[in-house]
Amino acid sequence: MNYQKTLDFLFSQLPMYQRVGKQAYKKDLGNIKLLCQQLNNPQNSFRSIHIAGTNGKGSTAHILASILQTAGYRVGLYTSPHYVDFRERIKINGTYISKKAVVEFVASNKQFFSKIKPSFFEMTVAMAFDYFNYKNVDIAIIETGLGGRLDSTNIIKPLFSIVTNIGMDHESMLGDTLEKIANEKAGIIKSGIPVIIGERDPETDHVFIKKAKKEKAEINFVQDVIQSRLLRTSMNKAVYSTKSDSHPFLNLEELTLDLTGNYQKHNLNNALVAAQLLKKADFKISEKHIRKACSTVQETTKIKGRWQIINESPLTICDSGHNVDGLRYIVKALKEINKRRLHFVFGSVNDKDLNKILPLLPKDALYYFCRANIPRGLDADELMRVARSFQLYGQSYISVNEALNVATKEARKDDCIFIGGSIFVVAEVV
View (cartoon, one colour):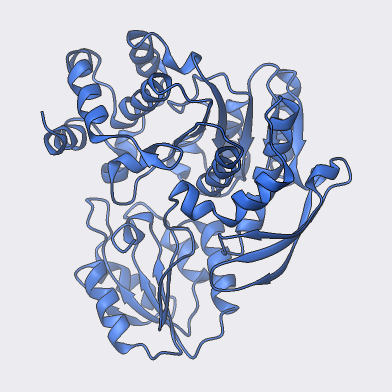
């Protein structure tokens, strides 16, 4: 098979959450264990960091990858979903897995796939583990897909784990309360392995404390270790001051981060606490490495879709935040932008609870409702109809690009255009 035929096989033969949703989610680690046994358990051949959480997994992973790369390490990075190219999921030092490696992995294992019928996600996780082992990475940063306890990535034994935060998302699969969702995420905490908890919450703290105690795992609540203050921000950088009473290494004045969304403060803190644990594990990371890495995350790691500016006149921004917590941060950031009017290109998937999301959105924006080009995409006319009941007004369009084209024509130079609501909407413009 060539590369395109290989992708066609992956996308059409195996369930893929990105396209079909809930029915692709497997609550079972059996297949991934069988797959990795077939591959001689590559996940045991490299050091790793495991990251779960409702929001911030990807940004935390990329900031941390940038720090490690800048310090001279060969860093594997597994994230999901992809925006444009399937190979975004599997990177080493910012370079995508080669098309040849994707084709060869599928061709070599296709017979075994037909025997055990793994999901799309199970197969891509195994591909990542196999590739990182083959390429002899120094360390791999592995992001969970959904949840944690039963996520296919949860067969690694990492140096430490990170749970970025807990919010309401994927309730039909993970549970309908923060406590239930936290229980699923806490499933990545393993015996004797430290864990970093990104945000404290009275509804979930006890879940992590109990699990860590049971596993005899050191627990680090980020806000007990480090505090950061945003000093100023511009179009392409944010400058912070960070302070830590317990780790002087983390006292950093005038620290520049090239990820500018206001929510990135939390992800920066997560990555800095993780860097401290890496130093403790004898990784050679200096203040100089951290400063350079944080100022060049986008260039170093090729991260996409996080408060990404795609045009400066009119200011046009996209962001993949798509659940209640993510959109709350986005709306706050949009309010802080100096603009005449906000044009909001908005789409959603058909399994989102719009009654929770739509009340968060600004009523004074002009909306361009659209449907992402995936089976799960919510019909734009239906989205427009529901939005009107929340006093959100605009027109519907047959595609994301048509909506953006119209918004760009209608916007003045001193307006702002925002594209979001779904990762898959953003994927069509980055």
